[in-house]
Image 1 (cartoon, helix red, strand yellow):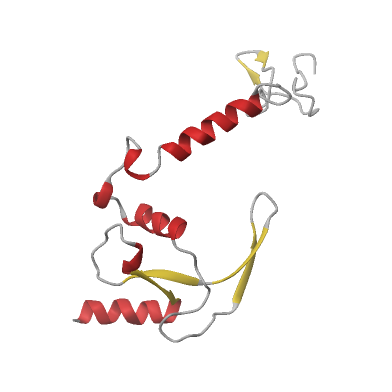
Image 2: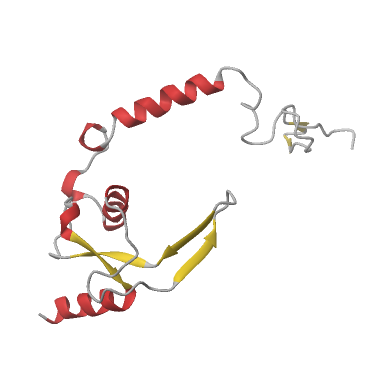
Length: 142
C-alpha cells in the first residue's frame, strides 16, 4: 500500500484515504499526546457547570420535551431500586457499557404523579414496571 499512512498519534492503525491522499489521523486521535489538552478540558468542564439549568442559553423551562424532562429528573433524584407502590425490588439487571464498566441495577422507572410534565422532582415517584403500567392505566381511565 503505497498510498497509506499510519495514524500520527502512535496507535499503529492505518488512516483512511480521502481525495487520493491519506489523512494524518484517525477520527478523534488528533489530540492524543498534546500537552495542552488537559487544561482545556478542565476549563470546558468548569464552564459547563456554570451554565446549568436556567443559566444555559438553550434552557426551555417547563416547555421541555418528555425525554429531556425524565433525563433532568434522573440527574437530580437518586433511584433506590425499590418500588414505592408495592415495596418490591425487581430482579437485578446487569449490563456492560461501551467503556467496559459493568452496571448492575434494579429496573425501576420514574412515574409522573400529577400527569403535568413540569420540572419538579417531587412530582415523580419510583415504580417497578408492572406498577407503572397499572398507575398509568388507572390515570387514563379516570
